[in-house]
Length: 110
Image (tube, rainbow, N blue to C red; front, side, top):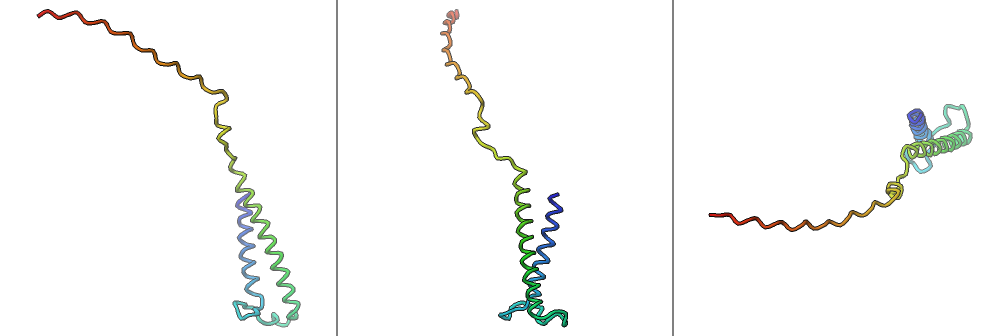
């Protein structure tokens, strides 16, 4: 499911870049689409269509971004140090008892 949404996200991103580049440039930037699209629509109608299309694609891009972020966060469960602590504290170790003194060895005869 995640890969399907990722592919849709990438297609929307490419379409968004294309629609932005087609729009008429006001300041002499990268606008490719200058004219009125071959007389099909007026310049104002084309601008309105491209503006609406850009807005819709931007909204879809944001929605798929949020969905992908939520899906990526669902794979990891938050871990807490408190949850990993043992239920009861371990009993303290008994203090070490000193060893009994060793018996002296009998003298060796020479």
